[in-house]
Image (cartoon, rainbow, N blue to C red; front, side, top):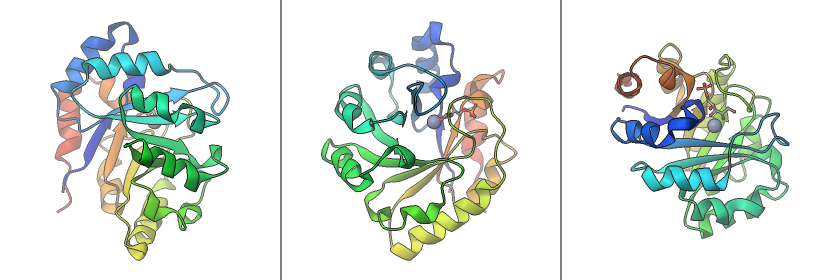
Length: 219
Ligand code: DX5
Ligand code: ZN
């Protein structure tokens, strides 16, 4: 099965967002990954609700919104209204994760949980049935273009085992430093969705790069 591909708009040319979104519309991308950074949870600020709305206005692909923010509960409704199809909150930013997941589901979005590289997958054991997607960070969140952390492979395998053991339908998304070198092993380890920012947007032909990622299949 080929992976689902979620190019990260963080690596796009922000002065030409409409053109970049239209490029993604014409590609084999399955989602548009939208990185929201508040300068508090992560040491960087990206963009917020109006820009997400503007992306949504042109997008023909569902928006996969990754909230790297503190107090995400305060903004779930706004991002849903702005067009988020998937909303991922950080495990490390939620004191009452189960409640937050319910709130996302009630809004009609898919509920995602992002985990930092230091967060063990086992911490999700008791809520895995309530999670549609785990966004596993394979870099420390905050910036595009960082180096992939190799320990991710074993985390993916452990998370896959946990999902199967619980009979959950949770998808595993990998976020950070994904490229054509590490993608096959990520898939073999159990990944379902690959986020790719700089690898796609810095390539000479992003549409073709997306196709190449999409063509990786498990034999
Ligand atoms: C990192 C973001 C990632 C990032 C991925 O904080 O969550 O989604 O945009 O970019 P690359 O693929 O360049 O690592
Ligand atoms: Zn992200």
